[in-house]
Length: 191
Image (tube, rainbow, N blue to C red; front, side):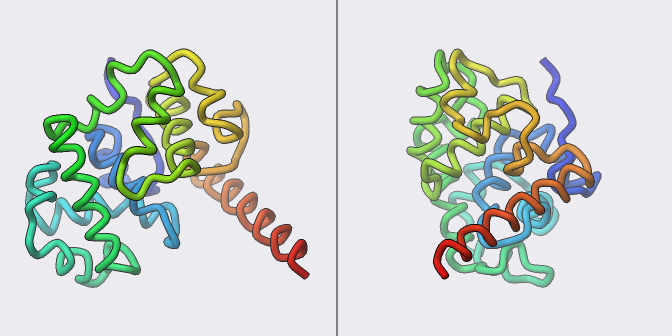
């Protein structure tokens, strides 16, 4: 099955890479932390431009990855810690999946199995794993039995909770508004 075009980075070249390369999609998700969503998902394209290659083995062994991240415009606002996290993620993909990120989800039978695999990734806690599972199900057609349940609220059809729901500039604005509402509600609960 051909990969469906995603619109996560809101940039044609970056989105083309995310659509074609499962590792790019996974790295974009890893970078989606304390950084604007679309910029996080542009990160793999920026990395590829700077490194000339984009594969798990190259990234896993790249001694100057922090420098690649730190060149303006930065790949992430925390170039040291996030370059290390991406490197650990790529090492895991090399060690466990022979460098093929798509093997992470290709042979799973259930949503819970996929969720467990995602949670085993460096930097992927339950929430990030559920969001990525929802992204795979909603936008990539990766739908093992029970995937929506395993993805929790992020798997709900028609929601605008996370990057899994971003398909256009308009949906990005809806997701951003939802996140702002949640932050405001959390702050109000603390007061």
